[in-house]
Image 1: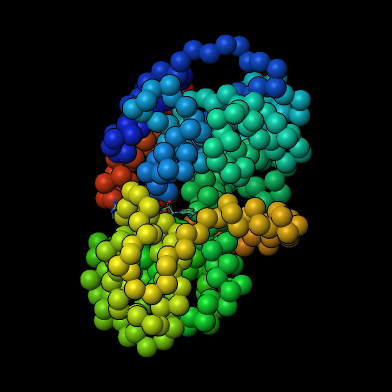
Image 2 (image 1 turned 90 degrees about the horizontal axis):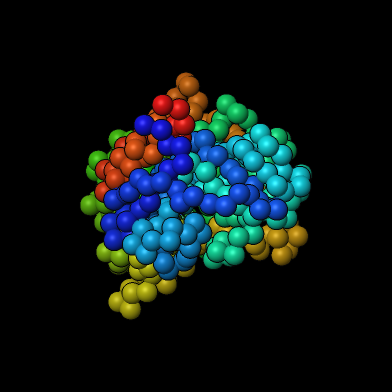
Length: 369
Ligand SMILES: NC(=O)c1ccc[n+]([C@@H]2O[C@H](COP(=O)([O-])OP(=O)(O)OC[C@H]3O[C@@H](n4cnc5c(N)ncnc54)[C@H](OP(=O)(O)O)[C@@H]3O)[C@@H](O)[C@H]2O)c1
């Protein structure tokens, strides 16, 4: 089935439920506008979290649907410029950025530079700048067409893994000698574990029984525990909690078990919750502090260190992309799914928490047939 002129909307009341529908007809491109044809995009739990925080953080506003019960879940991917009325943005250019699951996206090009442009559509002000920027691949010296799939999957996640570890390292890990990581099978979690490989810390993975073998196979954690086995870890060294699960009950157990030894609670993700659960008056120990990669990048910009940060980050990121798909011992296998209909099935599995962490999902838009 062709995806031409179609989009996949998400029912806000059930994030696994999608509706494939025609994109409403629009006017001809106005001055400054660019039409982007999405080619490939990734789907991970992070996209479900965008939808879960659709109202709280404003992700539903980024790509308005005009339908109150449905939103367009944002995804990251590669697209081609198929029409342009913006100076400096040429037809045929390949871009990386933030998209709805849709055949095409019309943007209002602004801040056009050699490296890319931003969408200045007023509704996009709901989210930080990094979500509104389109990178021109031809000007990105780290771009490698052969790595597009791993880039689509890991680029939006690894920046968080990397900046979170940077932030913690700058703070001397708050004195911790051990980091306990929840939802350790998630890509954001093991990206952080990879970044921590040279640090003098014990990195302990917490994961579901179903995903334990996968996490052990990664080899980037010093120990791997089922959630049920948390209390078997000795609580004798200063410990930092890197929380990707966002599970309030698990957090209470972590805090109760490590007690005075828990030095910091870094809340990064919420794979197992669909709301902000950091405020818990009954929690013992340090208050969870939410970590947001975009804030970290904004701070680099304010301090004038953004360029230096990106130089280091992009080099390390490429090494990581290559590591995850290293043919000798790949951490994941990338599976390409064809069309928005297939995307609906992937979204359902992600929302239900039954997807296989050993698989990285890419969706290709289908235009012929
Ligand atoms: N703060 C930020 O700036 C930022 C940036 C990027 C990502 N994140 C967050 O990091 C988290 C991980 O994202 P990801 O894309 O890396 O995930 P992913 O690779 O798709 O990870 C999937 C894992 O999450 C757990 N999980 C997912 N859905 C679940 C469910 N319904 N019930 C129970 N467990 C579930 C399972 O791990 P276990 O069995 O190991 O628990 C599963 O293997 C997301 O919440 C994402 O939004 C935050």
